[in-house]
Length: 146
Image (cartoon, rainbow, N blue to C red; front, side, top):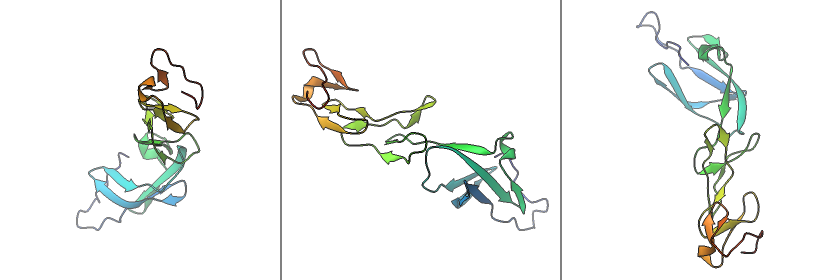
């Protein structure tokens, strides 16, 4: 956040910082020089308000260039859109999470085809499906039939 976490008088005890994300307390806060790291609660993808309290002063995000919100996104291996929770990537798919400025839905692996946004099934024959719902020559994707 760019704040200095060092007390003016180094013999003075510095209070453990507190972080709130959308009114939920962030846990296991660690200080790493001038950065704070913590474990976020399970929250939906999208924009959330945050605030930080340290040395008995509260900072509602202004320490980050006047921005008082953060954007929660899914990591690689998970998927979820705005206002959804991040979920494990389904069997037969690969998940890129939030990458290149957008959320990605699961994408079929080679040998699998999608039968819905997050449902995948094996192709028969397996080499008919190249991945990302692309079909090998002589095959076409028709929902659950390959």
